[in-house]
Image (cartoon, rainbow, N blue to C red):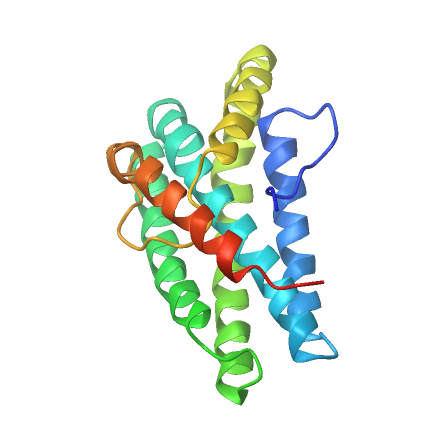
Length: 188
């Protein structure tokens, strides 16, 4: 299954905001799933979208924000720390039984952390990118982000939050993740 495709003519900020909204919905759908099979399917979609989304941000958006926005270094460093913690929590969830009570508790904690992180990105990083970069750049960045997501790992890899780490580990991890996905994909 490919990453959730967002069809619109939006620039990179609009594209990422649409994905943040989809992530919010997937957290709710996962938590509210009526059966373990449905919860597993929704979590699979959520995990996959989070993994490709964060990788693309780490490779494309954060480096540009670091260079171009006010206080970019500090803002991006804080987002990368949040992403590392979220990847660790997502990785733990990935190894759990979706029917266990502990899964629900950890899912709720991850949801809170991810939504807090998304809010920081939206208010501190995306808003400045939109006001400080030319529209043409934002539109080109969207195309590059979409490409990066097509080749990104589909599972969390804590500790791989920099451009260099993503470029080094990403392609190998992406191939392994896609093989695992083909073997373990939940049935509809």
